[in-house]
Amino acid sequence: WLSYGTKLEYPFEALHCLAFFHARDNDWKSSANVLRSLILRSEQHLPTCHPIGIAGLIDLSTALLNLGQSSTAIKISLRASHNLALYLSEQESLYFSFHDTNGPTDEVRNNIDSSNTLARLDQLEILKAFASYMRYLNRRKMSSLLSLDHPMRVLFYCFLGDSLAVLGSCLKHEATLIAASDANRDRLLQESETFWTLAGSYYRTALKGWTKMYGMHHPNVPATACSMARCLHETGNSPQAINLLSSIVCSYRS
Image (cartoon, rainbow, N blue to C red; front, side, top):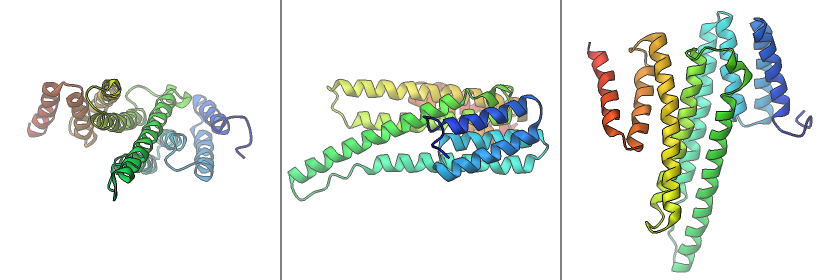
């Protein structure tokens, strides 16, 4: 099936466009059927954590919400959240696992250290590619049909923040392994701060969306606020992070 076209994404993009055309014509039932086919194809040919599959689950949840099937939509969106969380957790754990430099001799230890460095850099590139593709899918056609504070659009902003935050964390740790005099250290720290800043901007947008839809007492509000506070802390804005968390705590006390 994937032999069609010259890019892996072409068949899925075709299905996505078809689902978008149905949704644009307010035929959400047909759109949901096409999206189910897209998800089935992605599960057959791609890892369950692939951005195409995650975005497909969010789009299907959107269609089901418009059909009044909110309970099913919630279950599917939770499935997307679980797939993303599992992937990011595995990739982060795999990155940090490449630190064992134990060996019987200095030569062996040096070889292990060199191999681990290359493996960590490979993991960083994988995380960069994943985050980049997630940002690309944020501009997909189905997303253009939703308001900025639609729950599925807001949830995808959280997904983007999570992807970038894990990448920023790993880049910062990689910088600590490099001598202070090495120019690569400053480059990695700058990259890390850039990704933390981007993650914070997505969390900020998501936080505004959650509060607008549900008020301050929805469980997604403190969760997103904590993530945003971490981003503020990592970019040198700890006072703002404290103020943000304090405001959330005060809202629950009132």
